Length: 100
Image 1 (cartoon, rainbow, N blue to C red):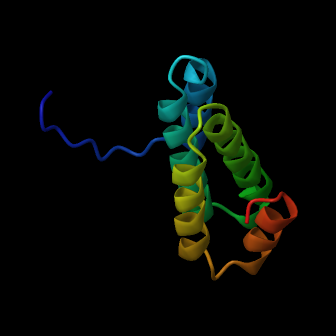
Image 2 (image 1 turned 120 degrees about the horizontal axis):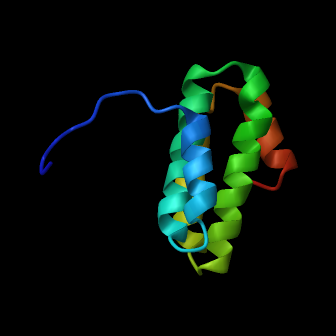
């Protein structure tokens, strides 16, 4: 459907499952889905979802490093951190995981 915009919500768990299936064949796509899931959780989820956000972003970092995409990952991480700067607990968890 050319030009079709989908507005239906997608659950982060579904994105993570799809990313796991496609990570080896389509690492950029998998990374994008994981970043989307992390953003969705950080924006809408409770603070109990923060550890999963860190896990997702660590997977994105791994995919980026294995595919020589560290600079785009750093940019994405910088935007993520700026977007959620009002959440010091999340930022502290990212820092503790080396996601600075």
